[in-house]
Length: 159
Image (cartoon, rainbow, N blue to C red; front, top):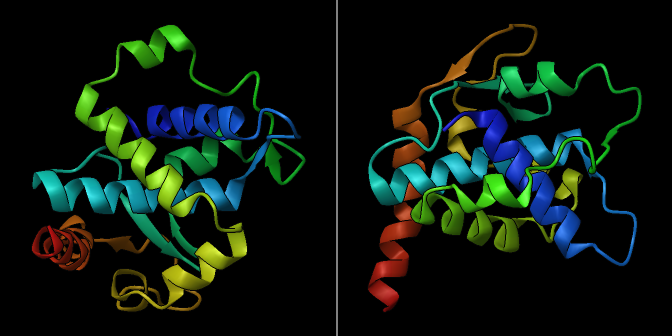
């Protein structure tokens, strides 16, 4: 699965959740949700949800390819209609991947972009890799998986 596909599905979920109001999602919030979907999926399934790297940028984790896709949009918000995944595309998604993306969206999507940004700044994958003024610093996938394993394992103990 490509990170852009995950992004487009998150945009579709946001549109569905906000059907009664303006539902465009911010670029910043989308990036943080990508990070959380990658983290939880890799912790649960011991493999990445998508292959693209996540980098440590000033405002938190970023998938550069998704950033590049939406950077030309003048507004901070990504227009939903032309960027969301279609129902036919959603139906073709692997069930485990689809459900995990939905779970993360409903868990983390309730928070504002800036709340998610602040949260990522407290987490070791970003904190241990971000270096002010440096670019293209990759957050290793194994560090993301290791960090999120603690939450997955805690959930397993609660059952």
